[in-house]
Length: 246
Ligand SMILES: [Zn+2]
Image 1: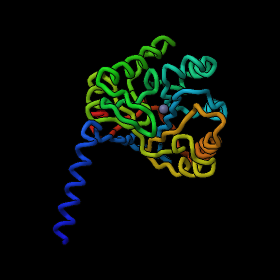
Image 2: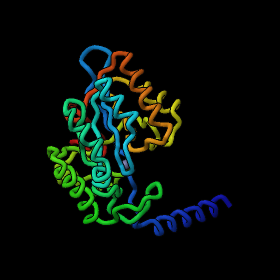
Image 3: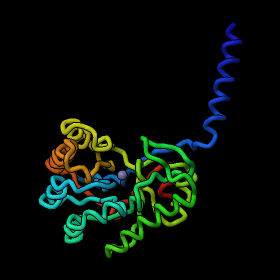
Image 4: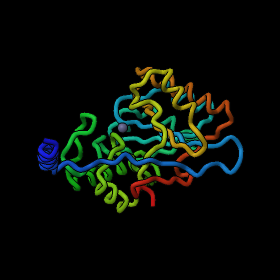
């Protein structure tokens, strides 16, 4: 009986393997920065600007409190948020703009859905997403981006290899600050305030109506009050897994 069960189970598993043969197993890479040599520690704040608008609560708090951040922008966001881009460019000491793709399409070279978003689906489409993101940044007068983060921050291993070949490092993270900007203010603040020396925080700066944005500000101010310093990815030695930085 037990043998039969096991046999049926194996048949089910092999059927599953056949039906998902074309969907790649995705990875969500991590990223850490070199810890501080002394003091209260340092973290890297990364904020995604996927599409939509600008959360001015966060942008103003960063400027007022002189908190540096790496902003991952897409081509679509850049087009619709000229005023925010102007503020970021007026503070080159605070803001580093990096590549979040041209159209916010997951960098996965097989056709599948990630969190309900359709993947690029082919190597050519991954290439187009990465290169059009870099081109959009170039049009705003930004220096060439060195970091890429794909929509959903999930990748097929073959896409990672391709993006690395284009010369980009891939920006994972170690603290999911706002859960895709869907968390409440309290939980977001708690997650960010818990960041430790060497952590890379991810949150969003494109959802001005979400409660999470308020929590991002609270969490950052709590870290600052503890004496934590903030660095941008270009100013830190970032190490990621899954071949994203080496
Ligand atoms: Zn995004």
